[in-house]
Image 1 (spheres, rainbow, N blue to C red):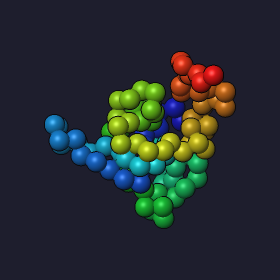
Image 2 (image 1 turned 180 degrees about the vertical axis):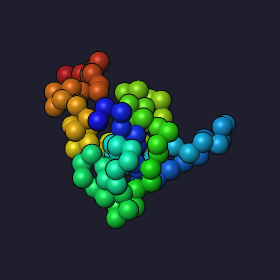
Image 3 (image 1 turned 60 degrees about the horizontal axis):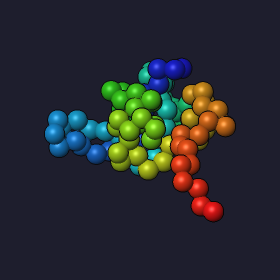
Image 4 (image 1 turned 90 degrees about the horizontal axis):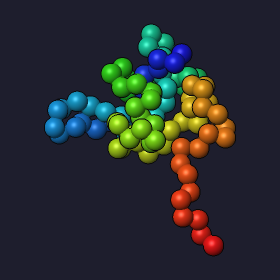
Length: 96
């Protein structure tokens, strides 16, 4: 299950190379299945498949293909092995 691809609610096309990438809310999707890791049906939820984009590439921490990603599904993230206390960010300048 670690080699999941991405299913998303929207898409955008990179003007430099013409490849489409996910946007909006993204979900983990295992190739060959008709549902996401969290159990959403791809067709009923109208999610577009992105088999050329790996799950790790759409994480906001990686920043690779996450430019237009608005939200990462929490259930899919947990299903792919993220822990509750893992934070993708650190506070560098806290308010007093």
